Structures are given as C-alpha cells and as structure tokens.
Image (cartoon, rainbow, N blue to C red; front, side, top):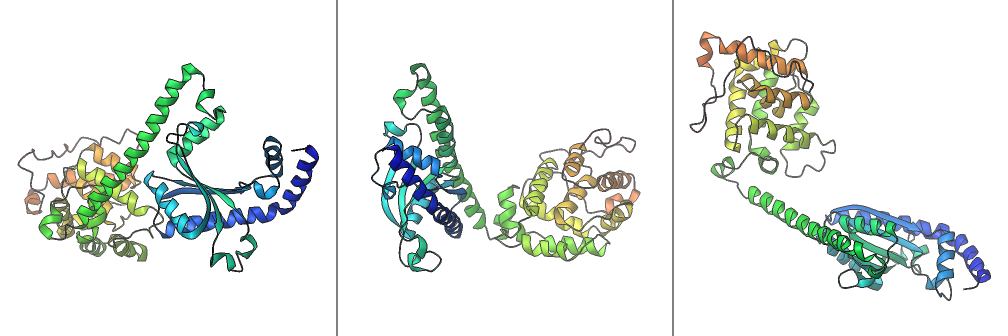
Amino acid sequence: MEDRTVSKLRVQYESDWPRYQRFADALRILLDSLCRETDIEIDSVEARAKDGKSVAEKLRRKTYKDLDSLTDKIGVRVITRYLGDVEEVTQLVEREFEIVEAVHHGRGNVATFGYSSEHMLIRLREPRSSLPEWSDYKDLVAELQVRSILQHAWALISHSLEYKTESEVPEDGRRKLYRVAAMLETSDELFDDFRESVTSTRKLYRSKEGRAEWRRLPVDRDALREMWSKLPIRQLHDAAESAGWRSDSDTKSMIDLWSTPDRQTDTSGLWENSVSRLVTALRRGGIETLGELADLMTRAANDKQWLAGFREESSTYTPWAVAPDIVLLYLISEGGDGELERIARRSGLADDLTNAADRYGKRQATQPDRSTRDRRPAKASQPPRQIKPRDQEPATQSEDP
C-alpha cells in the first residue's frame, strides 16, 4: 500500500481509536465476569486496541483494501490455568458471541509450531448488541485468543526469539525446541490430570458422611476442608473462652465461616494459612486421621486445668481462642519436639505462647497428679513421645524462626 494511503488510513484509525479501546476494555470486563460466573479457572484476560503505528506498519506489509479488512484492530486474550479450560472458554464464547471466523493454531500446523491456541474473530450478538451500553460497538470485530498459561509462555518466548516458522530455526537448535514444546504440552496434560485427581479426592471425601467413615480420613488439607464442620470446633472455642482466652466477634465468625462448604468469602486467606499450619503440626505430632484430631480437640476442650493453667502461664500475651492455634499449643504442651515450636513461630504465634506451652508441659511432667489428666494414649505402633528434660532449653531459643 502506498505511503500516502497508509498515512490517510492511519489518521482515520487514530480518530476512531478511543472507541476501539473502549470496546476492548468492555470485552475484557465482560469475558472475565462470564468466566468467573461459570466457574472457569482463568489466570487473566488481556485486551487492547492496536496503536496507530502498529496499524500503519501492518498496512504497509500486507494488502488491505481498507481498515475494515484489518480484523485484529481489537485484540483480546483469555489465559486459562489449565489446558482443559481452553475448550470451556471456547464454548462459552460461542454461546455469547457471533463467531465470524475460528481457527485452531498448533497441532499439525507448521506455520505456528510448538504451541496450540484458539483464535476467533468475534462480534456482539443480539440481544447484547442492542443494549445502550453496547450499541456503539455492534459493528466492530475483535480477535480473541484463548491459551493456557504454558501455551502463553511458549508464545511469549518464541515471539521474543523472532522465529515465526519451524524452517527459520537453526538446525542445531530444533532438537531443543522440540523437547521444550513436548515438555510444555506434556506438562499441560499432567496439570489437567492432577486437577482431576484432586477434584475426585475432594468428591470422595465429601461423600464420607458417616462418623466412622470421616474419622478414618487422613489428615490433609482437603480432608480438613470438607470435614471441618464435623470437628468439635465450637466446643474447643467455648471452653478456651471460658478459661480466659481471647475471643471477639471475628473469632466467633470464623467458626461459622470455616464450617461452611464454600469458603470463597475468606478473602484474607486466613483459613488456608491456618489449615496449612495445622496439617504440618499434626503430622509432626503423630496425628494421622481426622478421628485422632477430633479426639485431641475434645481432650483439649475438656482439659480445664490446661486451658486455665496455660492462660496463666502466658504472662505477656493472652492467647486467642482459635482452634488451629489451640491444637498446636496443646501438642507442644503434651511434649512436642522443637520442630513443633518452630512451626508455631513460623506461623506467627507469639514466642511467649510457644514458650509458655513448653514450660507448662515440662512442669506438668513433674507433677504427682499428672496421671489425672486425660492424656492421649501412645499408639501401639510407636513409642510415646518423650517429654524434654526440665533443664533443657527449647530447640528454637537460639535459632531464628
């Protein structure tokens, strides 16, 4: 195309650019909302209108009759976390938009070697195109790309190397290129398989409604997530609160929040962090099933002597009546090793609390009436945990958390 014609079209394009960019922004928001409403796990949605310089360069390189022939003035990219969700997004787009053209890039296509992605030209369809907020864009076409994160990573890296086709790659580099492409494709498939495995496990856990069934489940994040409401959380909280542990409306709301199947409202990540900390501590403390955890919680809730004594032992910091913290401190008091104290400190529990738990456990080990406490019996398959000698300092005293 002649430079004079290109310059004229560029001026025309730049005058319309604000409308193109508004459409790009509106599509980004709409697609993000549609994906989330349908529970499709996406990483991001990107959208932009080409700038005038890019349009002019493309007009010079290729033969276009006018600006309407340039179909990628507006570009949108949906990046999914999993390969399987690429198809989910594609089907969603087909339901919500008019598909002007659809092209699958990747497998068997030498021109776009090494990765796959879905490319579509889309346009608004009725009734959305007639709505006041969308009517200004009803004649516009946008190019949409749908990729997984790994597909997108390949596209970014290969683009930075400036190789558009396989034949452009130096021969001695092709073998490595094929290996990278194969690993990324395999990784995408394995991530999909892993997600399916996790989903199946959670579904299985959720089906364990009977007491005997859920008590046999292993202590892991997914089992706790699904069965949290069956554990004696409120009993433990109320007992600690009665013994003088701190509690407020937020602490009490956590009980109800964590006892519901859907915890998406827990935007602070507090539940996830607490459960992760609890799982690590329980495994270190020899608690292997949810039944053993439930028994430990019940024992701690009924151990009025410990709840009151620990509250008094913690002289500078009043502990909160939060179930994961109570369980961790109780394990330390029962004779936990230095690693439990490290876990507690890394999780943000005050040093005063972990030291108090350790001191209380040591002192109780020397009390004549210690046998009156309802201690957790040792398992037949392992010796009882050893209480550290009274004169031994906690292992973390001289170490950073």
